Length: 243
Image (cartoon, rainbow, N blue to C red):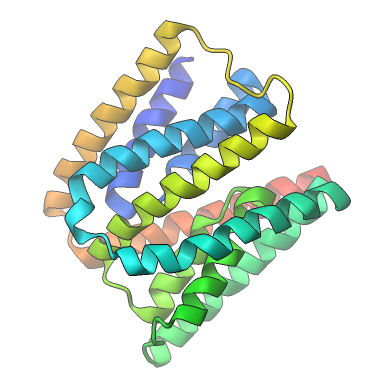
């Protein structure tokens, strides 16, 4: 439990600085602590809470039209990912999604060096669909959004802010779907366990606020890309080990 609480603290700090990172840090420890079914739900619940805490700090910078452009196709992507998991071996689906994300990161970095890609509605909608699908298949949906940021040169501060309400909605949908389709998916934690997790999230967000005061946008953006790359590589390795 102590390792889980430490992971929640680290994940909350990274969520505040980079906009993503919570699930990538916390998921391995939750799965070890309470199993995969309950672990996935706990990560999503904590992700919702963490995103809400960050949103309270950055709500004025949210690009709501961009958020709304991402959401509809994201829910379609979640449904598509759920169908894929029903017909594909879990390891195969995870490897495929990780490869797609690595290609997306590499492609967006190359395009970003050549010139800025306009952040059009079709591009936003396509990214939302990919992110939703990848969230279900491998838990690395945030990587698609990082690729979008790099390709369109989306300024880091509004990107982080816009990501938070999006993640709240996407994670809520994932929790509802999991609870509806998986028996005993609700995390079996004691009241003290829940209290400890909430406390670590609050402390982590506060620490992240302090860190953002001296981190410039360029450094924060590089942290986001590094976390996305780490998440995609971890998903790829995990899938390959299961084959």
